[in-house]
Image (tube, rainbow, N blue to C red; front, top):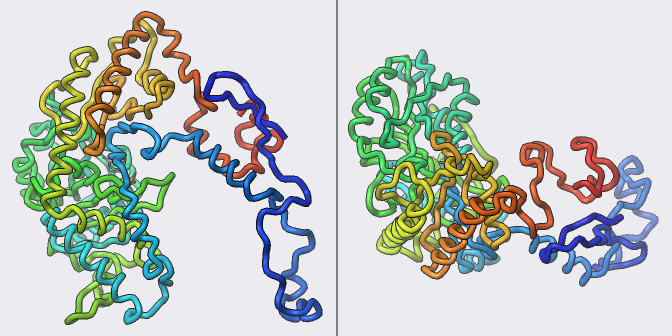
Length: 507
Ligand SMILES: Cc1ncc(COP(=O)(O)O)c(C=O)c1O
């Protein structure tokens, strides 16, 4: 079967996607060690295969080339500049991979008894302590597997806390209109009614509207600081006062902590619950949907409700603590994504507090460097000192019918991953840019040059931008279908796909 791919050079080529040919071999399996006649005794007939497994038959070099070629059709932090706002796509140091793959870590089995995994438990314990120090919280669970999973954990903790005080009637969760979609989604998923608080002209939470909405029915306010416009919520202490005065909790979405490491702590700003995205701030790899880690930290009064088990230190030994009768229960199999937790621990230990401060300093510096240069040409509705990211708007290109997504697509032609587009929703035609601290000045300058070139194209030859990308194997997939009904197997490429109705040639 052949599938049409547009080559990087722009031409059309037919690549043989299905490589399997009967009789080819890439692995040599050991001989079966038990005699044929015993096979039926060992494996009941009902469990035996009737047909040979339908496995691809390819040689090793063909297999390697197939996957390496496929991987090169994608963008990644290891191949391209990736200024995807809010996602903190910073470089993942390779030393983390070396350490996480040491046999002493990688070969552990999660069911091993505590006395055989003391080193791993020590890492869990010390990582929890380090995150507590960095955020100003009292205790952490490392179980949640993503930021959104951390948010769900936070909602469960919120309800358990209020119910324990006889205040289970609190059914509202407040979110600013600039909030990330997972915030209202997590709250609604857990049965809360979500109320949106508008932003004011400065792009911050409208304090007056917040005051008017706060009642004793509110369970918590979910906030990220800096917010998704990359602006620090300078009124955070006033916000805390308004929220706490009505007995509600303050929830910190830590996706933007990369701006604040070692400078300001959410715990000191008054937050009661915090989730962190280790795959952002602590540079563990992002993977399509995981595995990530979204540890959740809480103030003392919420610690009894944390998920089971917690890792504790007993004398000079480490162990799991299941003795928390008020716990919300187990949130994740075993103790979360251990390999990811190791990588974050290594990052923190390698950099130390001074190194982490430098991370945030440089992330903010890079963002402001780009903001200054780009806001001279692009429209920036909140053009003031920003934190680790900033948001431009291309709504002034409306007459050219060029949208934010088109600019993102055109960037691909120049070898740059798109910024986040059309988010946050409070900015029309938003381009949200987060360069991170790991990019050189040369890369930032090259990005500015390309952005200016694209702006010129949008004005002089808008069709070129509207129809981009022109150099990618796949141009504009149906992103909703791609996310909801992904084609995950080459088998789905055979014949007409049942969900998209597209033929192999059409995909
Ligand atoms: C501000 C903000 N909050 C929450 C999340 C959700 O985190 P995750 O993707 O780890 O579930 C994101 C992810 O991009 C985010 O940017």
